[in-house]
Image 1 (spheres, one colour):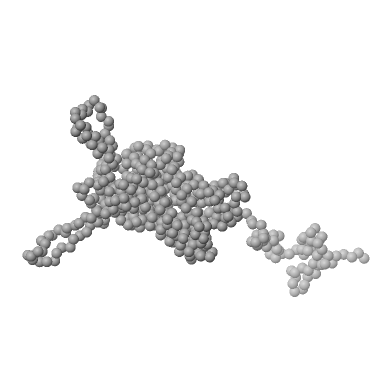
Image 2 (spheres, rainbow, N blue to C red; image 1 turned 60 degrees about the vertical axis):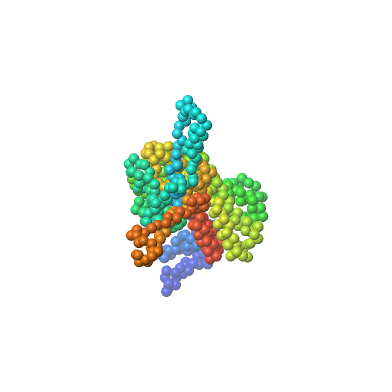
Length: 512
């Protein structure tokens, strides 16, 4: 009798459990018919095991497994999360950036200087109409021309000091305006005493701006930071790919045996990113400095600001390569990353201080050298922002409406005459401006009774002694270094974070 394969046996207490026979465990039968064990006795649908492997999702999480490609949903969630974190970080720092920018572009003239700013020489007189009979008249004539052409930076001794408000602000001199008279409502009182924090409080308390103005230009700053962190590594990788690989090593810059080429290419990549994104930095400065009042606001948003600047001021080429925009951006793009990247090299190679053996000493050295670097970068940043707020359109400089937008109204007082360039801007700041205001010192009235011999007479009015301070070059020097204290404070925060979290974790705060 022919032998037939035995049917699978079932247990009486487990009727749904099928025990396959031995011949069904062979490799050939399992490969040919994986479901042969269940063909004779079908398993109910509720107890069937899905065909997919349940460990498939866990295999990708193993260290030696191939990484799975992220789907669109995870990429979108990561992008939204990083954008929210970046926006929140910028929101925390933006009030300080607004206060520093307004303090840097604010024009504070010394006594007697303001009437001569924007003074234009009269047109040349025909020599036939001027008759000079003797030498005395000739000397007087040329002396008058010399006095008219001189900048007259020395304040006259007979002029009274500039008046101040009860809160200590300088009173702005009258500006002839056809519509708004001599006191423009869009310009806030001059803030001189104190630093960035005093400017922040002044902006928030002034009714023309308000606390919401401390976040002007925040969206532009977020976009600028995101593009900078993307464009700069791209330029660095592109430049490294063009250089032979033998010139570089996998070690960090501080431990590289030949750090020169990598330092040069890193600085070059930062410079190219700064120049490429310079129009966005121009838009950010304009949005921060412009008046927040709707009737005086020239730019509605970053896109409108960029389009208006391009159409009014000579096109996109001038936005990049105008001398007052290109050379300050080039200097800042070179010096700032060069100082930041070369600081650890100087400490390690010349001071022989290593971060592993002496972390505290290394951090203190970084703090000192970083603060010394601010002596170079802060003036360049100040000059660049002052040149950025100068329009290249004649009607905009004159304060008139025209082109495609409104007249340019700044919330702080700016120099009525434009700067010719970087050198002239530094010279004018040092010689024209002051960093202090006249301080009021009240004299004490005598407590002696009237009629006492030798006692001064009693008066109902308090006498005030106005002592003017800051009329020398140090006053202008103070204006050139607005924001220096905030930079020192940021370096101290980076040093403290480096002590707590370590140098690598705290290095991201260095650009605050």
